[in-house]
Length: 557
Image (cartoon, rainbow, N blue to C red; front, side):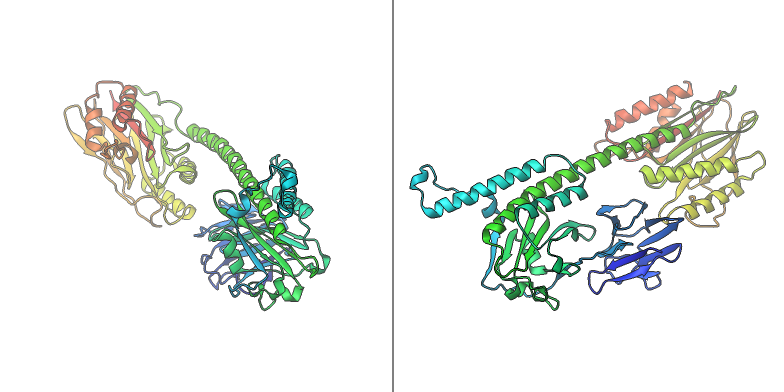
């Protein structure tokens, strides 16, 4: 059975065996694995077993769940060595982190040997007067030799970092290059990630076997100097520097020289690089600190570029998936209006994003009886479209010639309550049109009242007769009826129509909608709907849609 190796922000690490199909993780003590983390939700995440595969699932947490630095949507499969970030608690799946990095609160005073240099002083090229080499002073020649070494190393590293690599591979490559040009006993690359944002070790390199399995201890004050003050920090005798001291300090590991440089991408600090040495006779120098800082700057820019490329690739993948989802959703909508002798029916759906939560449908029940549906899920986008697809499938399974509308609505309501969060609900209208008599038996679960318009001016509203689907379990619904006479039209719509706004923030409104349709009842249904779409575009002046728009017109000849 795999284990979870847990590394709290404060306190000692521990492990937990995955010995059941589902393990809940969170701040509440009733979780299978309780973690006293203030940034953790009460029931933050789940570890789910499926055969020989394992998944981590975000349990609607406030701060999200991150796997290997990326926030997951829903759930993600995890493998040995994957790192899960839950609040500020790190969890390694089935693989212990042999060298643990810990940031400790330590005194902020500095001892004599320590050096801290502003980034701007290191990254700006020195203004040396070197036009006549033979006349240069010895100190200038030493500076020239140092600058030449810097340029050669930077050129070599820059060329080595030209090709794009995935971020994890890139970080390992960066550490390889730093170790080649700046010998060290240990080195760590840490990036700011997560919510709350915190330093997460991404690469730990142990070149001295005597330091294997020992904790890497960083001073919080040193980290703050690198992050907030943008300083590169060197302690040429870390064992005597109070800023590096702690109960389990550097002294125990005989660390005599340590450096910390910010990863600055020319805009912000995105992390730090730490390095140390145990040799008292071979300590880091100020020149080493400058070299590490220059390499850190190169690395930070490349890391940011890699992140941008990965985000671009991820965005492209999501766009393709959304495009496919949009096509699937379009396939759910009616391909054509039902051919009826006495009625014209036409519908239109315009999502404000690629996919949406509006839905309309025509469902043949039996000869002479047609189901009409219009619905609107709270919210927009992928989550709303998935819930609507589920409801559509359940509705089609429920509709038969012998069903009772009240029972159907009750089942749909209970299904939505079970299948969605407490903040999700659906406004839903379902009517059955008798194509011989024009009678509509309907129920309205919190939807905008469909309108029955008469050429002579009469107006009827098919008001709600129950709560929205998904608001409360065991809700009760009432079935009602209305009559569509000769020349009458029934207009079904979602609030995306009436709440569309122009640049002055004025709503299109129900009255404008009624006037537009009533003035054109002598036209074919399809022409009325297309005209309405054009009128909405003119009214909003092609502003971006704030909500999905759906409308269905049923016109009796």
